[in-house]
Image (tube, rainbow, N blue to C red):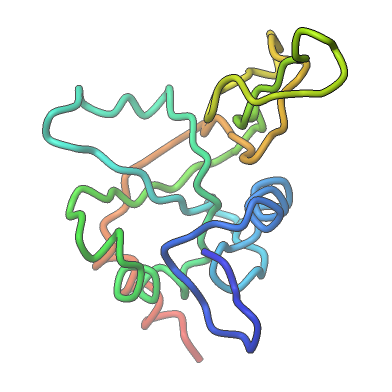
Length: 162
């Protein structure tokens, strides 16, 4: 999600700078307010029918978190979430930065300029392998993950509103 001039939100694209800031500071990708709560932080991931079942103790994501009030907004307005019914709402006790992905550049034969060689390559912080990478997305490993029913979250929001 990115905000264009004039304040209009574009739900179908993700600005790399905002993505990194939201991931590092656990800010909501919609409103940029703190998304972390005492009971954990909400994230959305996808579980497609043709994929193996999601292993909750092994989730690595590049999707910034959401604060509880912005979950219904995202589910209603994000074109990807409206089209794709495989979205799963997760609550993570902890999100630990684990790596980046981006475009890998290599020096050309004369060694006088860099040329792109691969797009969307992941590099772990534990074993960085791409010194010529221009990172575009930050990834976090989610720990203490539980699946959350969006309807129960909506009921929880109604019961706690002033």
